[in-house]
Each structure stands twice: as C-alpha cells, then as structure tokens.
Length: 131
Ligand code: 5GP
Ligand code: ZN
Image 1: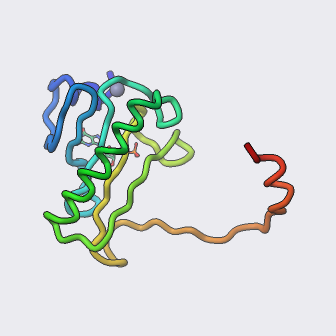
Image 2: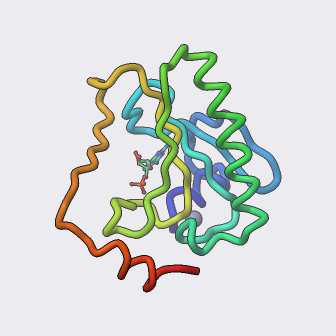
C-alpha cells in the first residue's frame, strides 16, 4: 500500500496543514528544513508527468498559496519548489508530490547542486527537442 494513500485515508498520522476534496498538504517527516511540506493530490498517480492537467494546476496553485504562507509564518528567505520524477531523479515515494522546502541560508541542510557537465551541441538539441 502506498504510504501517501495511507496518510490520505487517515490510516497513519501526519501533520496535515491543509486539505480539500482533491489535494492534501502535510509536513514531510524528514523536515530537511523547518516547515518542509508536501503537496499531494488525493488520487494516486505516480509522478507529475502522469497527473491530469486540472489536478496539476490545483496542486501548483496550492503550492503558491501554501508556499507564501510558510514564507511569512517562518520568516524564510527563500524556498525550493520541486517534484522528483522516478527513482533516477530521487523519487522515493511513488505518489506524485511537490516539495516546499523553506530556505533560511545557503548553508542549511538542503543541498541542491547544479554543475556544468559535458558540452552539448545546443543547435542539434534544439532541432531534436523543439515542440
Ligand atoms: P521523494 O524522495 O519521493 O521526492 O520524497 C518523499 C518524501 O516523503 C521524503 O522527503 C520523505 O521524508 C517523505 N516521507 C516518506 N514517508 C513519510 C511518512 O510516512 N510521513 C511523512 N509525513 N512524510 C514521509
Ligand atoms: Zn498513493
């Protein structure tokens, strides 16, 4: 059984901050930083890429609303808003969720690091990927 579906069904407890018919928001058990929150659609879909558009729009609207609320209440200086898609990207719970990670300074426990890797042919990539 999916752990987030169990939280949604109230079979296991969580620090729920907000709930409506379609979406729930609760405190992440790991609290990477103070106030780390997950926004989760109640209907089980594995990733953001599987989520129907109306639900996704609702999740992102709440990410904005709850994100602003956390920023104000916790006096955070920034926030990472992210969703890991599949294990290769670090997804550990296969039920779509958006992380809200309030940031206090660059040396807090949330480490997200982008490094330049091998050079790509941007023109070739653009022709391959253009929609
Ligand atoms: P992912 O790695 O899939 O992007 O994120 C899953 C998140 O779910 C992790 O940050 C993890 O701490 C959180 N998590 C896993 N199990 C539970 C749980 O039982 N309760 C709560 N509140 N969070 C959980
Ligand atoms: Zn689920």
